[in-house]
Image (cartoon, rainbow, N blue to C red; front, top):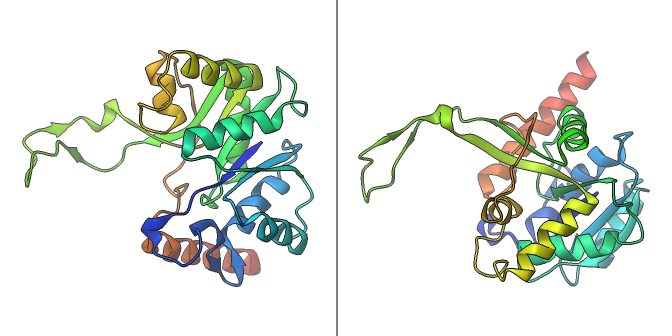
Length: 235
């Protein structure tokens, strides 16, 4: 799998990239790594790291018993280029028909069930993206008001992990480069796939599986982790 830890997370407002913010004495990325370390279907992890933090990541892995990291590569100038660096990093490690999962280091809420179903759907369909129904109400953004309500049943909330057969992941990014669209679209794999007319297949997700983006999200993860520990102690 490819774990993206190449961003700086400026919206959190911390002195370090958001994946390195400590929660209960451990950096966020340590929690995320542990989810994949513990999953029996994950064979190896390629870390895409923000420049200058490679030593931090190696130390975090050693301190938390993370043994599945097989490679560390440098992050790119944006999301798309970080993914491409990760894909190149998997060359010689992953076979063409292997499932290669992409996940965000700042998404530690991911569960075993989410990972397992993502792999299952990818094996059946060639790709998979964790998603859940749109539970909130949606309206158009028309200045300081909404003039039209959007039917939420026509939407799905897309998240990570996102999985591809390795051959498919390479093909999608190769075609994106050949058609010159990588640098002119919103920097996400989903946007690239939509531009190429590729279907995105749904796998199981839930509302808690968010990406830490703001200070409030850090507090939310703190509460989530405290609740998880309380349940472990009392069950």
